[in-house]
Image (cartoon, rainbow, N blue to C red; front, side):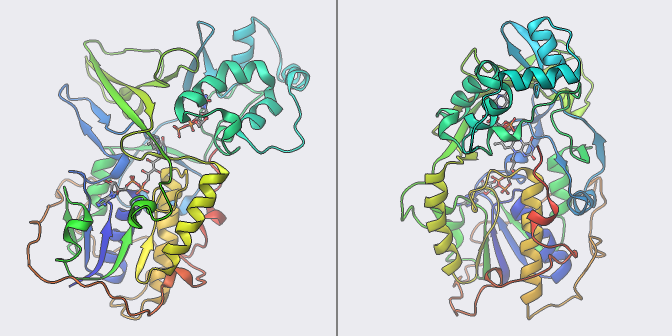
Amino acid sequence: MFDYLIVGAGFAGSTLAERLASQLNKKVMLVDKRNHIGGNAYDRYDDAGILIHQYGPHIFHTNSKPVFDYLSEFTKWRAYQHRVIACVDGQLVPIPINLDTINQLYGLNLSSNDLEKWFASVAEPRAEIRTSEDVVISKVGRELYEKFFRGYTRKQWGVDPSELDACVTARVPTRTNRDNRYFTDAYQAMPLRGYTRMFENMLGHQNIKILLNTDYKEIIETIPFKKMIYTGPVDEYFDFRYGKLPYRSLRFEFETHDKPVYQPGPVINYPNDYAYTRVTEFKYLTGQESNKTTVVYEYPQDEGDPYYPVPRQENADLYKRYAVLADETPDVYFAGRLATYKYYNMDQVVAQALTLFGKIAEHDTEIALPMATTVSSGSRLTDVDGVAFRPQAIARNGNGHNGRRRQNGSGKARSQNAKTDGKGNGDPARYVKPTS
Ligand code: FAD
Ligand code: UDP
């Protein structure tokens, strides 16, 4: 009998599996319908031997020390500050828009003070910043909005920025200095040996069994468990009872080139040309050295794997109805970007998972180990570089037990008002600042 069936081996599911196994000695079955762990952060070596991110570029950045410390248990890091170039009017200029962007684009020689005044002269103040159009136009005016944001956003989301919540374009700041970093978070780094290696280290505990290539619905009746953590799309869990929640998807096109470097920076955004939004060259992110290089083109689309919840009021309203159902479902916890329908970065998902773990731990009546208040876990089997460990998929439907979901109405810890996350932290909103 497993204590937990966890659906999804991404950041949400893997963090919870790791914590439950190592801190509460729970027996965990982690199931994913894909053939690998890591969720959308999965990386692997391609045929040319280049480390690629199969689901698009993933750059780790956070302001949360607890989250960074937690993940540092499972990986060493490569310091990496991300920079992005936008291709606008035939020029390659830095994005987020900064002093160099404007001087280069318009052939000016403004100072930071000049630029502040310049922005003020072109900005169109808005009484209320409600949409993604408002955010940009109120800061830098219509012309820059159209050069950098309108086309990119329409491609990426399939709707106009005026139909998206402010939070989408608000992820990209505007600067009057020359800081051309994409993020300014306190911690910015890439897992030294890649994300998948980090996940392997997280999931190396002997209490965690991993079942890949399997939709949880295939095994829910045959694998016995007490509680469930679900990190897939929330609408799917409830058989789309209230209709489909929109998720935006992407098609990735990888290209390997027989040269060491392909483009002049890690990511080039194409707001106005082509069907793709951006091109990423992985070697900049990973620091890998090779005579070959691999890039990925991202083509946004509606169909396909659900990658992005779409932040719009009507979708938030629909999600709220599903959230009520989720709250009313005994012994099932919902976590992660898809199950809580939030446009979360990796660090925010980890923070959310740690908080949920804290709530579970606080209300757990069967704790076998003393509650840990630090991130260290004495029972870990692997070293940080993960040399010793490869996750083992176990046979499907192996034991023939009849799994029955406990519907005893004992109440869910998540609906109660917990104060800690087992690491001495509270609500993620309190310790993960917005990252842009
Ligand atoms: P996921 O990683 O989506 O994991 C959910 C898992 O559940 C999946 O593996 C799925 O196969 C599995 N699953 C779903 N349904 C079932 C089922 N029925 N049965 C079994 N398994 C199921 N964040 C950053 O911080 N920095 C970045 O640079 C960044 N770049 C990104 C770029 C792209 C293109 C995308 C799409 C996202 C990016 N993110 C980035 C966000 C990041 O991917 C997410 O925050 C994080 O991976 C979410 O983790 P998760 O566990 O919630 O979900
Ligand atoms: N965006 C844009 N132009 C850019 C970069 C971003 O219009 O050059 C907008 C676009 O709507 C995008 C959003 O800002 O979806 C957030 O950008 P981010 O780079 O954070 O997107 P992600 O990495 O999550 O795909």
